Picture 1 (spheres, rainbow, N blue to C red):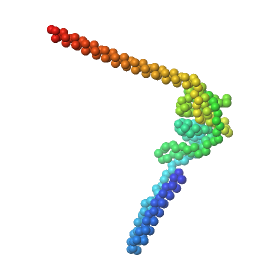
Picture 2: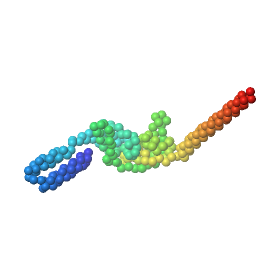
Picture 3: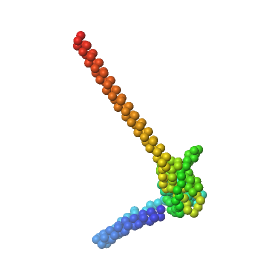
Picture 4: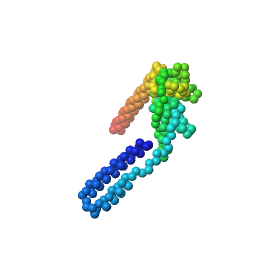
Length: 232
């Protein structure tokens, strides 16, 4: 926020300097009688361009624990799962949270911890439906948002990131390599969908054909009725 304030001040000062330069040009052209009023105008311009007080709101720094940010004040702050997944946040990362007056949470990763990349297998708990990745004999929790983003399914191979210098409970998913089983299931689902769509199209075409036959039969019956009337 300090950099933003400095930028605003520089902009205002440039405008003030431009007005002062213009005033000096006018002073050289005007007579001494008008100099006083011109200086008063320059002073008014300077006051008009003074920046308003900027409220920076609340700034909190803390440590990411895999789901939340634990602030320096000891409070637990919710970190959006989509942001944590996209940023591939790892336990121990230092975050800065800005809370403007409107209450919006704006996070920034300011000091990431050293990471190590591991390969593991994705699992899902049948009870709570939560996901874990087992790598090198250790089970790590992962965010459901990350699994959903990569369209992961159980038994898929995962590339995860974990802290290099500490034992963690959570890991960040960097990528997922789909297993042949999950790929075949997706293909089978796609084939079933295509089969259903083709059946619907055939039924629609058959319905149109039956309607056309019915219309022709009506026309033939009507024509025969007219012949009977004419004959009588």
